[in-house]
Length: 185
Image (cartoon, rainbow, N blue to C red; front, side, top):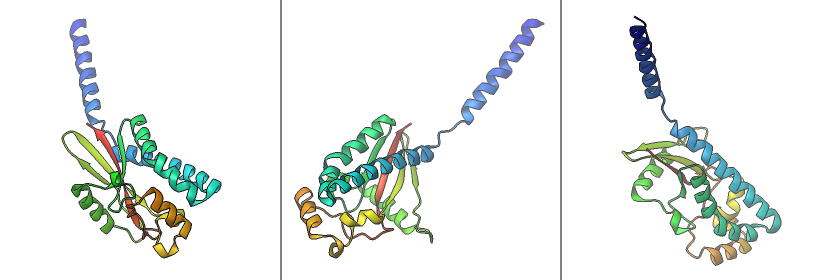
């Protein structure tokens, strides 16, 4: 009798445990937002420090030397592949693929009346990729703005560090690119 009671309790507990484990899902979008928020915050902080120390002429070389490595290190620390991608790269390694270009275009068309672009989650058998918009803010236009609004010194520095630069012509609120946050399944 005690053996049967023990078996019944074990079966109920096991069933509950398995059922509960199957219910839990990973909120990839939430994690991606946290990772990209940290990336944006840290990059902005470091760029603002470089700007205070030497203006855009100091921030541009800092960005060229550190931005990609910082993004990659943060991704490794968070167990994801983290990239910044765009249709108009400053660094050609940030140019997105044909598939990513379609996603970018879709996101760009879905800007809300409040100026907010949606995130996009794409899942495959091996990966979940979350695309988080990178929106141009006020301080960005000093290096990414309309050519007529960028100082001669900044243009000269950009040309020296990024001779094939395409990342200009933006206005505040424009979609500059996307963070791509890839999670292995």
